[in-house]
Image 1 (cartoon, rainbow, N blue to C red):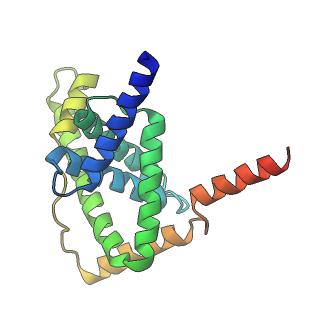
Image 2 (tube, helix red, strand yellow):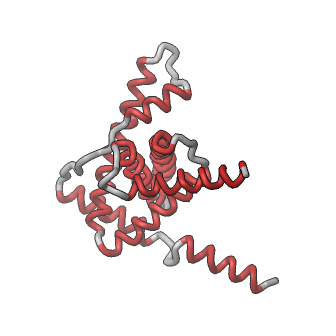
Length: 196
């Protein structure tokens, strides 16, 4: 009975999180931050496909942790690494699809995410500088993450910078496999079943 109740609670927590993140009518500031953070994490994850872009990995991880803090605050439950990676991968897949129809929206997201990344880095640098021992505890880090607000607008950039951003996004999308992760996993499952 307790196992059933535990699974039911987990199911309702995931359902609540999904509903909160996708329903604008009941979206809160926390869900907006969580949603934007996981979209940024997915975007920077896609940018890791560009050779020599190791910084994108670190930013994808940072944005994932912002998502984890705000999503955990929403649900009252911790977000596992597996759940975090699944959410990030789903966001990346959604961005790949969105890019096909609306590349300008993905470029706008890239501008917002990059601006937010710089703001988050400055917030943490200031906090470390103000800390008596020059470091942050786990609770200080989580409190800082929970204090973050989602970026609400795309800053304007000169046309030549916009072309550069569009090119980076195109290069990252062109570097992605033509099949989605889910399609590849399905093929692997079928191959494993056929080999039995």
